[in-house]
Amino acid sequence: MKTKLISIAFTLFLFSIFANAQISVGVLGGVNFQNLNGKSSSGDVLENTMIPGFHAGLNLQIPVAPEFYFEPGLLFTTKGAKNPGSILTATTSLSYIEMPLNFLYKGSLGSGFVLVAVGPYVGYALKGNVKYEGGAVTVDSPVKFQNVVELTDSPLVPYYRALDAGANISFGYEMKSGIFAKVNAQLGMININPEYKLLSDDKSAVKNTGFGVSLGYQF
Image (tube, rainbow, N blue to C red):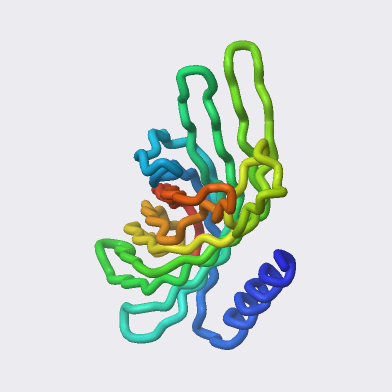
């Protein structure tokens, strides 16, 4: 299923490139600062802190009106959070293939262009890991991605939903040469915590949030 979704997304991305001769293609990469916000199964607010990550990929600028563009992209990006407990510190790392679908304003400013973009994104997790650290002990536990955790599933495994979606907004500047820099903020809108059949009154809700800085080149 994972491979099919990635293949479909990549095919649509390539089709967009060749469907419009006026499209410009950009390559970009940068650093993320991500967190997992929400509530635990008891309803308590999660006390997580941000962790650094990275993103890299492509975007398109498809003109739809003077100074306005549809800006889809395809990125590999890492997310997660750190939970510094009194005994153990748990660091969750999640890797996604992500497709932002932004609407971009690109207006002339000085010798280049000011960039303001807003829109939804959808992502699909490819892999994940939770590292538990306490004293001299370190344990790595791979994440399993599933929507429902059954009674027969291991309670020692960290679980998340693979699908993520939300909204993002970015501000940046592109020089006449095509070099650009952007600051991006994201707000996840989907609970990526699965349903636990063992819990009758599960109040948990976990969502990706964060921001990043990108550098790139628009051809």
